[in-house]
Image 1 (cartoon, rainbow, N blue to C red):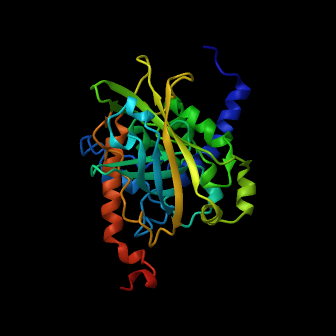
Image 2 (cartoon, rainbow, N blue to C red):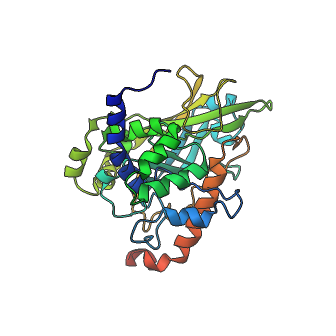
Image 3 (cartoon, one colour):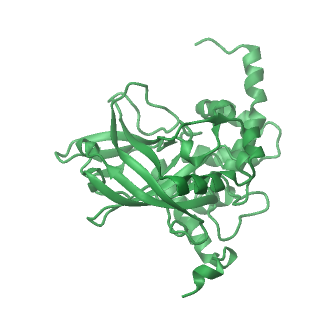
Length: 352
């Protein structure tokens, strides 16, 4: 492989400051930790603490992806997903959904244009009593390949040492694709125009018992209109929330749920590695967002979008992040629910 030219190296290094800002504000993407590691190496408490902004955590709120808004709707299953999974969510029909659009930041009042990562948390319930929860982001790949590296990234992004990010990137070449997206990828002015990706691989089991490694994405049916972060800033600090409220009030918004099946040669343990184009895909149905509600009183407020809460027919793979995220989410949930007085509901919602 040819070595990069000096000019390309200077260009890459010149982007590190911007990348550091993206990571510091957005905390990279998900609130990952490694609860399964030995306590002296990394624990949920240590990593959740590392997510906190300089002034400390905002009490009563999620420790990451703290800025968000609730929605409810339906998942309209086409039945096509049943060829990969026996989960009832893939049988033809309509299933109730609740979810949360969000920004990857520990600051619930962060201006929209300062946060690169956008996400969606989703819960699909089926008549058999099972629940499927998932958390997705708009990045095409994740920033690092292990929970330990994510912890290192948080410290590098928050470090006062001038070469902290430079040294981190040099030690973690897998960061490059995420860094390129963070600095050059397109922005949009609406949650409805975002493509959201699971990034992590899961194992689907069909009715015959056959297993299929799968990742999934939500593809927006709304027209995508790219804008710059500067243009987004001009629209106001909370434009994404006001825009999605207005948009959904006029018409439900839709995304196609597309399942991507790995080839035997594809790895399933590293979310920094995209699977090559041309892999088999199955369009499993449509997410329909029908109603938006403010988080303070909305149905998503007390939902922990733990990605290991899965129905029969879906299980985790050898990717370490879902279990690690589960540990971090649980710690964050315990903290914020114990601080409910610091994030009060409105007076109207507390009345009988």
